[in-house]
Image 1: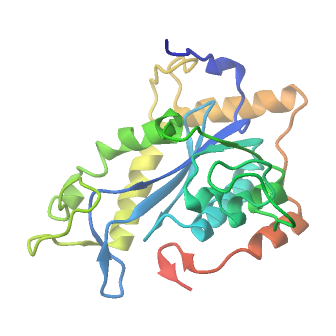
Image 2: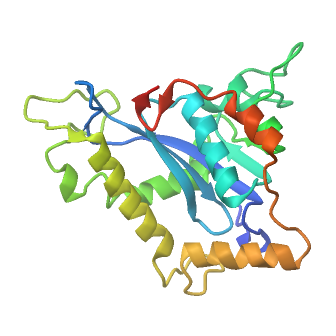
Image 3: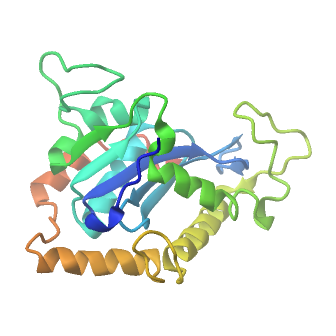
Length: 247
């Protein structure tokens, strides 16, 4: 029997869903290489609003840390993070210090602090083989109808299979063009009015989020802002890829 949950009792930034998805089109990263990009996204569970996202060559911990840090700076520190057990999410940079991880088991010995411990975010991992339970996964499915199959990428597809290889007819799109399309469609996704999801009452996801933030403050639970020390410690983990380009 499916479990029907009432989201109207949850306020924004209480639960945030993290996931990554390999997109179906090919991009040119500007260095002569072409690859299917991975989109990382943080989705607020209460409102369905996409808080922030990152386009990277692969699902990696460095990009995930940067995404979480940027989201905390922009909106405040969220209370709980719900994600799967992928190596980018369950490794030390993100989950260091967590009491339990399905991938790495119970921590042994001295563990480095991950960004979630630094920010005071409680980590909750989805059960193995149950990743579709994450709301971020459902958000990707919605966005794919307008992004993956959009006219901007009509010649950049090589099939939906994970291991699909591009044929000579495939023309990768510049990565900056892909980012512009994603930014446009995610903005539309967040701001589109008339939503009929649970508790939406015709509001956009963005308006649900903003109304909920005001309600948090009125209820005596204002948004936590990261301190200078937290931002400094989180910044020590930054290296490797930045926005799809090597640094």
